[in-house]
Image (cartoon, rainbow, N blue to C red; front, side):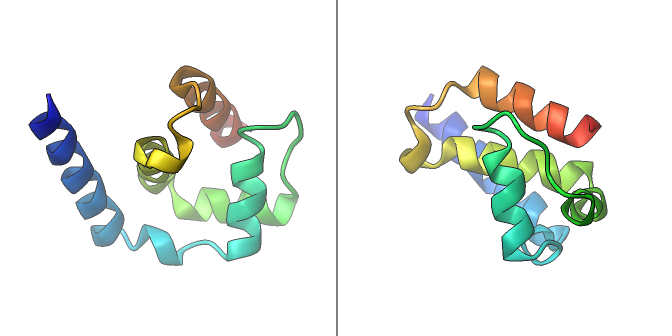
Length: 90
């Protein structure tokens, strides 16, 4: 199972690198989008535009990377994924 997790992390990191995901959004909007996963509020139109510019592939890869980070091990993945989909759809 551990080897599968390592493979998943490597593939996800490759997706992020190949798509330049980490450079497509400014830090203020990254933080605002990220906090929408934990709070009941929406992001500004400006940050929404940055999320759209980021693209679905990057959005999903960055959410997955967050969930794989040990700092966030106490999060409920299903809740975060649901909220990230809502953020994208909005």
